[in-house]
Image (cartoon, rainbow, N blue to C red):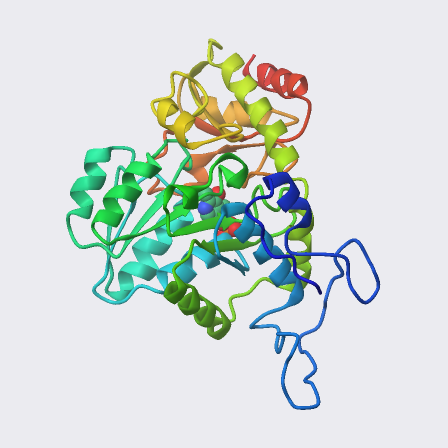
Length: 382
Ligand SMILES: *Cc1c(COP(=O)(O)O)cnc(C)c1O
């Protein structure tokens, strides 16, 4: 397969269509072929002139999606993993016993559980702080820290961390910065442009976009040593995304900008229209002027504020559960980022240790018509 070099001069829409693949030189096929091979033939001299040897190390469909996501995020190299959590673990695996990690108190519960169990059990200290408070970031990083983990907008309250500030403080102290960019996607936010060293995605969400492929990505901005460590760790751990999942993911990314634009527009309109609803105590959406992180989000996000929002229903757990049970278009399921709108009572999936408000419902706004989504929510709230 001919590889197009990622060209940072091209727009994100063009990269979504073309980055990482060109018409197949053998057949002229415009759409990328699916290479279901585990092994590749040597030349007569025993070498591998086409660069592929064995699929745990590298496969054409993985190269295609990795090339594309690296270009979209403005990084040098991307690695595709079997899930978002496999991608974050690949980064945590690069830490050594005695290292210190600072991470947000509010973030995807699976990532925080990795830090509290797998990472903490390896002799690495983990400090969870409120990264939305610049002073808390400065205080925490005064202690020698190997990695600052960020997530913004963060799951599930959609709180916003000032990326430029946190990255500046971290780099002043020689600390690496990784940012989970799952909620924003490169269409709305590019942390590497602001200086972050790594970006992580659950490709399961917006990049995959159709609720049919579990996947994760880690993107390195430029650190060559870190890149080689992750590359060799991935090949040794066998923590890779299979060819068909890579193909699905690459295919979905073609429409990422269109989907994001539509989903962001609907989410913003819903947030706006539901904010004054008598049965809703609070709407959390970074695009609302009332959101505490709005100013920062407006500065560091572009093209939209994402398509996730959270509603606090007046009352408690029972009232929130009742609303979740009454929507019809908003399907009651976990996950996010697909074409179908989803609604979820977040505290129940996070378990007894969850600090998420019991009256909070998280909404993933999909591709249905906005008027139908609004009617669905109004009916459930009636
Ligand atoms: C879903 C999610 C993850 C984990 O991704 P998986 O693909 O489910 O392993 C990580 N971060 C965020 C923000 C997520 O929403």
